[in-house]
Length: 268
Image (cartoon, rainbow, N blue to C red; front, side, top):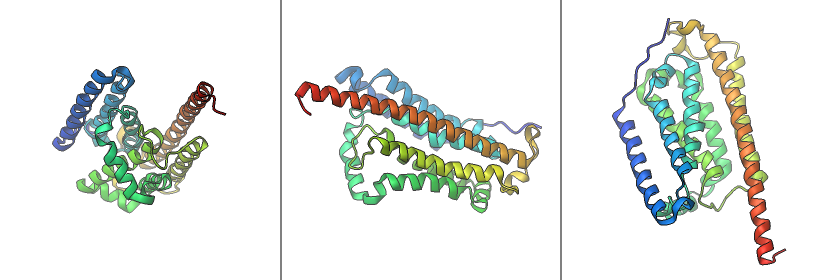
């Protein structure tokens, strides 16, 4: 039996996606006209639009409805929200594009105190995923649309804060440097990997909301759960590997720039 494939044409989500895209395009064109590719390159534009597409896929396309019928599709949805959408959106930003709000963001960081620290971001990222996968709370999200929406918003918000410390074009007072970034990303992915392992190897079926569904694609509930946990583990490992490669390349580039600066000005 096949699951229902329907589009979740939520007016609020569609309006917010359209507004975010329009504001970004307006700002990108202005910066492009003033600074050229240095401040607003085509790859940055493409990256932001891919991020919007990821959000559209997770929240509007049939992926949203499938996530309520199959646990493995819920995992696909939260992967789109917590890693891919957040990463592509942040990669689309530059210091020049964010200039109108830079002062406000800096003020928010200063007032947030420890809540703006990388440690808090890691705990929030891993904790949000862990708490929402507590069976009682997760089953409630399957039955209540408002709780389900809150789950999505908290996933995305936690992911944006987490990846902001890695990809932010604005220099933070608590900016991660060198190996600190490696430990930051690695620590978060290890924590979420533990959650994935618990789901994969759980001796019992955890989410009764899915047990009451028909058997779609021939998947028994326990098989669906194990497949979902395995997908989480594979994705966490893949993202960690890609992040480590990206960070290593960035560290080399920063080291080369520092060396060039020292040679130019006779420092060191």
